[in-house]
Length: 238
Image (cartoon, rainbow, N blue to C red; front, side, top):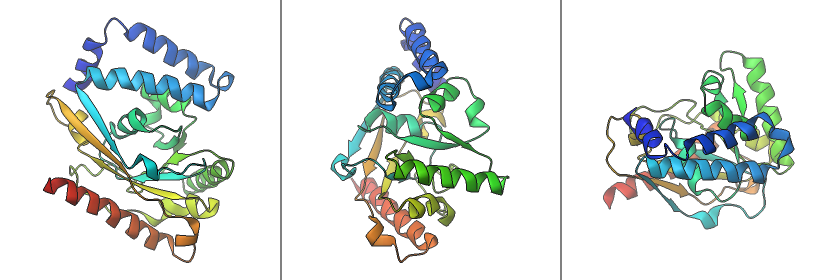
């Protein structure tokens, strides 16, 4: 985790202010709008990434729906993924995270500010409740990010199978599905390098409800995975 140490060292003078503000917003989450909380998160992440010598390049921002109430579906490479997306995504979104991760300091405050949902993968009933809560939130105009692989791939830019169940919130909400390709994010925290790093975030053309309403969730999962794999394959050619 040399990169995290670098982030701290290069932000040592502004770190107290950044952390105080983050913890304050997390403790008083209902006093602030989602836009206000998101602005604080973006500013915190911006300084962290620059301190860690990481540049995030975004592509396809025009594919993000103009109206809120949609779900991003990216590939999952590691703990840095959400920080990469936060850096470049212009609209607020929330996430689903494993209950174990939600207890980690700093990440706990980030997820609290996002009003994220923690999921217990061993508790089927609780998982179904989270799916229904997200669908309801999306219907009311919130945006989410869901990792359809269920866990980080640990294979660099290679994807695991996308789980059909991950798309149940989208089908219940009848919302746009926005595939997202994340490239090289694993290099941030899963290697010992502190060399300059560029991470790519590609927002792909959304699937509208009319496009997928006749499909099974496993079919939707296959389509989204193939689209992301194609983007990653093309990026490796250049």
